Amino acid sequence: MSYSSRLVYLPVAALSVCAPAQALVYMSVEDAQKLTFGEEALTPLALLLSPEQSAAIEKDAGVKVFAGSLRAWKANDGYFFVDAVIGKHDLITYAVALGADGKVRRIEVLEYREAYGGDVRNPRWLAQFKGKQHGDEVQIGEGIQNVSGATLSCEHLTDGIRRLLATYAIAIAQH
Amino acid sequence: MPSPSPSTEIRRARPLLGTLVEIRVDAAGPQAPLHAAVDAAFAAVEHVHRLMSFHEAGSDVSALNREALYRPVRVDAQTWKVLAAARHLSQLSEGAFDIAIGARLQDWGYLPPGPGLIPSEGNWTDIELLQDSRVRFHRPLRIDLGGIAKGYAVDCAIAVLREAGIEAALVNAGGDLRVLGSPQQVQLRHPQNPAFSAHALSLCDEALATSANYYSRRACASGEVSPLLDPRSRQPWLGAASVSVRAADCMRADALTKVVLFAAPEVADRVLEACDAQAYVQNPLEAAA
Image 1 (cartoon, rainbow over the protein chains, first blue to last red):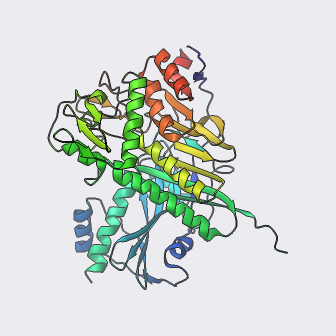
Image 2: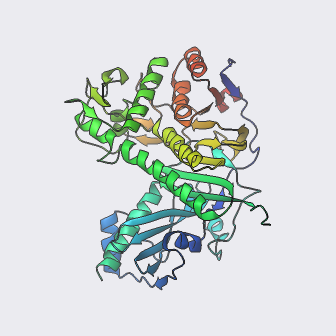
Image 3: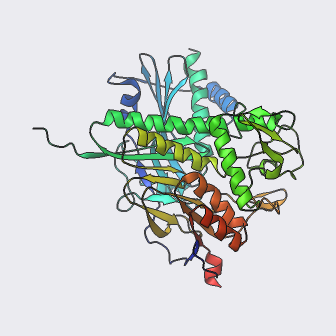
C-alpha cells in the first residue's frame, strides 16, 4: 500500500457510516402538472388497452407493457402521464408531458427508490410502498444524502418513456 | 415590513446521459424562478447529451465516428473544448486516459453496434485537432466521451445555476457531482456493498467523481467485461476497488478517475498534482490482504 500526496488509500470501513440506500420524492404529481400546464385543471383519462393495442405497443417500443401502472390526463393543449418502471436496483416513478402535437414537453422523475441487491422485485420490499400517495414523504433514514458512486444506468427508464410514447401514438393519437 | 422569505430546497431529476441527473438548489424567495433556473440547467445538460452522445445519430460524436477518417469534421465549440481537455489528459497520463475506445466498448455491448466493424488499434494520438474546431482521425477509430462528458455536463449545469444567481446547489449525474457554494456532505458508496456508504467527504465549490464497476460488470462472448477499459492493454478492468477524484471541476474529476485506475501510481500522482486534484481509492481486496 503506497501513500503519496495526491493518492489516498482509504481503509474500507466496516459497512455504513450511513446507509445511502435512498427513497426520495422529487416532486408530486400535482406540482409536475402545474410546472407544465400552470393552474389549468387536467381531466383524468381512462386508458384501457385492448390486447391488440398492448401487443402493438410492445412491438413498437420493444418493451413489455405492464397493466395498470400508467395514469393519464388530458390538458387543453396536451397530455400528462405518470408511470413507474422497475430496474435492477431501483424503482422510478416518472411523469411525461406531451404537447398537442405529441412532442415531449417535459420529463420529470417524481420518485426514486433504490434497493441494491435485487430487492426491487421482492414483493415485501414493494409492499412497503403500497397505498402510498404520490407526494407522501417516503424516506429511509434521516435526511437524504448526496451519493458519489459508479453510474447506475437507467435504461429501464428510457425504455419506459419509449413505451409511454408508443402508448400515446397507438391508444390516444389514433382515436 | 415583509419578513425575509425562508430558504426553500428544490430537488429534481431527469434521465440524461444514460443515467439519472439530479439538480438540487437551495435559495430564498419564490419558487418559480428557481424552477426556471433548474429547467435551464437541465437544458444545458441536454445540450451536452445531444452533442456528445454516442447513441444519437445527430451528435458531433456520431459525425466524427462516421466521417472524420475521410475528411475534417467541424464540431461545436463545447465538443471541441471536451476533445481538447481529453487530449491534454491523454498526453499527461501517457494514454491511461483515452477516448478512442468506442469500438471495443461496442464489441462488449456497452455501446450500440455499427456501422461496420473496425479494428480497435487506433488511439488518442490518431485524433488531430485542427483549426476552426475541426477534427480529423488518422486511423479507423471510434471515440466515446462517456468517461468525460458527464463531468463536463455537470460543470455546464453549475455554470447556468451560478449565472441565475443561485448560491447553493448540487448537480449529480449518477455519482459524478459538483457542489456550488457552501459545504455539503457527500457519501462514497462502499465498493463491495454499494447500498451502503463507507466514507463521507465535505465538498465546497468542488467536484467529485467515482469509477467502480459494481453496477456494470457483465459477461459477454469474450468473458467477463466492464465499461472501464484499460486503453493501452484493451482489457476490461475487473478490480474490486472504487476510485473517487476530487477536483475543482467535474470534467477533470470524471476523467481523472480513469487515470488513477490505469496509470502507474507515480504517473497518476503527477497528473493529479498537475490538475490540483486528489484521489481516494477504496480497495477491499487490499484491505483484506
